[in-house]
Amino acid sequence: MRTQVAIIGSGPSGLLLGQLLTNAGIDNVVIDRVSKDYILGRVRAGVLEEGMVGLLDSAGAGGRMHAEGLPHEGVLLAFDGQDHRIDLLGLTDKRVMVYGQTEVTHDLMDKREATGGVTIYDAGNVTPHGFAGDQPYVTYEMDGATHRIDCDFIAGCDGYHGISRKSVPESAIKTFEKVYPFGWLGILADVPPVSHELIYANHPRGFALCSMRSETRSRYYIQCALDERIEDWSDDRFYDELRRRLPSAHAEAMVTGPSFEKSIAPLRSFVAEPMRFGKLFLVGDAAHIVPPTGAKGLNLAASDVHYLFEGLQEFYGERSTAGIDAYSPRALKRVWKAERFSWSMTMMLHRFPDTEGFGQKIQEAELDYLVHSTAASTALAENYVGLPY
Ligand code: FAS
Ligand code: PHB
Image (cartoon, rainbow, N blue to C red; front, side, top):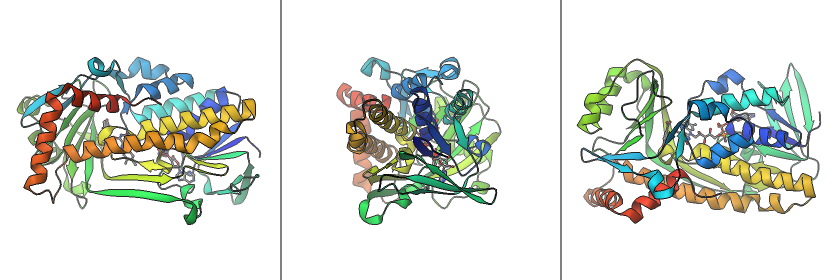
């Protein structure tokens, strides 16, 4: 088989890039090691920046998002028993869209099928080859045979644990990492959200986040120790702990109900530099990870896709390599600003086991300054709604 762009990974990065390329008449194939249902069974992000919304519209996959998504104009910070609203729209003239990553992925899969895109699921031992030269190709195993896809470029959209970044010689890549000493225990439940806007709570017992997927489906998280086990957390125990971390008005108003998803996610900051190796480009989580406190993970994947798509469109349209040559430095500038924001939100809102009295007082002063300074609130708001591409 031959294509112009071979895309490893059928998550949001790979599907969004694939659809933009297809719409521009650039041939591409998406390969994933798991099934479509497995991908759709993963519960992840929930907040989309306007840039991501625009890209889904450009891909022709934004219809259901506009019909079912929830545009949000503000977000709440809760500490010392009180809520403090950050007026995103008033401070930035922008909103965010609350719409689950699972739905984004579903919409992109449907669009790809409707436009005849080739996607190979359950592919074994997917491996990128020859990307340092002029004849890159990808191999994979299926039905007892090894298959080969010759291409012009390979987009490594295969996430943090994928093969693409691991296929780059160690001498050619530099990584930066910070692992946080806690995780997020999250549940999904078909109960009305406790608040119509997201609540990020800083409490002596730990961080909590009240989010949602719709007006009837809630997504709740609490900070937990890394050695916590899901089987030790009944729904009742989870809700009791969540309510203890929220202002009393929210705790008393919370509607609880059986969870149908419960998981613990570790938190890390990670960046691999550069994001391009000859004919191989790293995109999204394959190149970087942020703690979800800033709701940036999925949105950074979108801006990577934007930069790479522009570069590939320029290459195939004008035979210019300027765009693809600029991909890595251009993407990394935005990546590092999102890494900074996600790190700062995580440091400000979580309780750290080793925080001495001084560290705690600094955190309290930062929160107090933030909610009483228009300049500080604006800085948070413009990062939360998404910095320009
Ligand atoms: P993905 O990881 O989504 O997709 C990669 C795809 O590549 C997968 O389908 C995988 O099967 C495939 N793949 C991997 N290795 C392969 C191989 N060797 N061969 C072929 N295919 C391969 N972000 C937020 O903004 N908010 C959140 O709350 C949030 N929560 C998260 C919770 C968890 C547990 C995780 C892991 C991430 C979370 N994220 C969150 C970040 C997440 O949303 C990512 O940013 C987003 O999935 C990035 O999309 P992709 O880059 O497409 O990577
Ligand atoms: C979510 O709804 O899953 C979500 C929302 C905001 C975040 C992280 C996760 O910062």
